[in-house]
Length: 134
Image 1 (cartoon, one colour):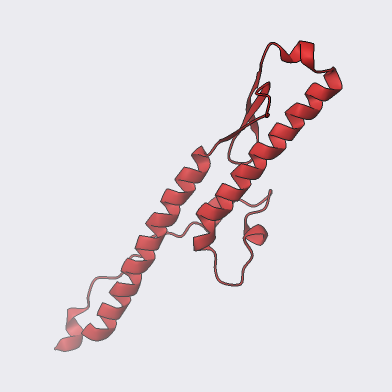
Image 2: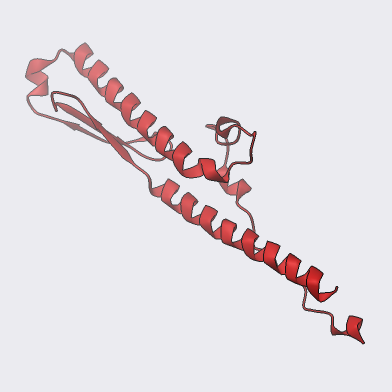
């Protein structure tokens, strides 16, 4: 391998490794992401995790006097939807820069997709072959 070609390959490998590190950092942030939505009257607050799973529901004690069971259920579901939507928007914003052009985010990062399978592995180059110059 001549020196010019080797330098080009090393440059590509360095760029690939830099992007792989950035993607792993973004995935780390994604796995810790949460969002909390609170009703306008502050009676209901819901926190969801990175995939929209409910992590916490907080109810003001007055909610039982103000809302019927069906109204309370609706209020909880609305906040779950709002928090899940926020997580989805932030996930898309965080991961979209890593998506190949023309490939929709939703096609890769759907409910059943495992993003870990898309994480690149570092490139390892063979040691220089010094016999080629002699």
